[in-house]
Every structure is written in structure tokens, then in C-alpha cells.
Image 1 (cartoon, one colour):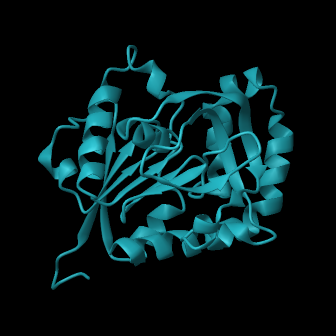
Image 2: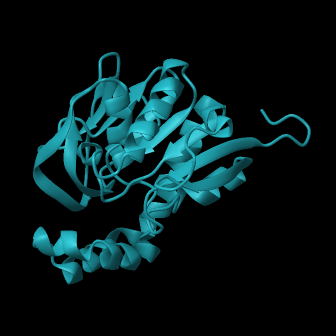
Length: 239
């Protein structure tokens, strides 16, 4: 609950400019959250305001936990997340963010069996169907997958969703942490930026951009409402 003029504050760690809050941004605003976006690669991640934030959101990006030698800030990021999870502070990880959360909890993060890029449904576990992800169990539900890495389910975490190629697509930890390997937040209206930014990856994976663009157009009308339902419910649970 917001008291007086006090607003809850979310700190957002972004790894590339176009993988931003997307559809989550307006949901946070309507729910009364203030947001500060930090560039993970260049920000001082040891700042107390990040450690103490009412909510930490760790977004996606084209690097991985295994790239720590090339990108040393990843170690600081994992340490930050580890401290927050240990004290059950609200934390949301999306794509790379979910992998960093898994690593912070001591789980193995590694290359998956295939590149999973494009729109596809999920299989929810019983716990997933009882969670904020329940709308993803509906017949027309779909999410954007865009990853090649995966992780083991961390000790103490609850698996919420899977796909045939990736057993661990989402997990909850404690009362206030949610890790999503997939993208609920991605705004279909802005995915042209992703196609440009990830052109090398798409080419290497032999993903046809016109086909991906066509698939996006087909699902676009229902994606914003789906994101709002899920994120509104989760924010209400942590408030």
C-alpha cells in the first residue's frame, strides 16, 4: 500500500536498450510504482538504492551467465540478486534475468538443446496454474521465446512452466521472486527493434524474419491484455 506521497520504487537493470520494460512499464505506472532504469553494463550495481529497492527487475539481453569473463559486471549482478533473494525482496527476472536468478541460487546455467525463438505456448505445472501465470494456460495463450540457454531448477524453487525443449521456463522462489525465461513484456508493436538488434542471432539460427513478423502480427491484438493480467496479479501479490 502506498502511504501519503510515498511511491514504491522499482529499479530496472537493462542490458540492451530495445529489451526494455515494454508492456510492463504502463502496468507499473498504473499500479503506482516509480521506475529508475539503469544500464547494467555501466551502472554501479553496488549502490544501496538498488539493494534496498522495493522491486528489482532484471531484463533480458544477448549475453549469458557463461560470458562472465568477457563481461565482469555479471558477477556483481549475480551477487546483488543473491542478496535480494536471500532476504525475500521482490525480484523479477526476464530471460537473461531469469538465468541470473538461477545462477544466484546456485543452479547450473548452460546452453540449451536448441534455439527457441518465436511465439509458442507453454505447459503450466499445477503450481503454475495456481500462480499469476494462470492466463498462459488458456487455449489461445502464447508467449515470445527468444533464448538459447537454460538452467536447472534451483533448490527450493517451484517450477511453474515448461516447453518440450526446455523443462524450466519459469520458477518462483520464496514469496516475492519470479523468474521468466520467456517474454511476456515484449510489445509486438516494437519488435522491429528486436529484429534489427538480434539480426546476427536470427541469421545464425536460420529464423526467417518475415515469418516471425507475420506470426507477431497474428498474436499482437491479445498480447497487451495478457501481459496486464499477469503482471497486475503478480504486483498485487508482492505489494
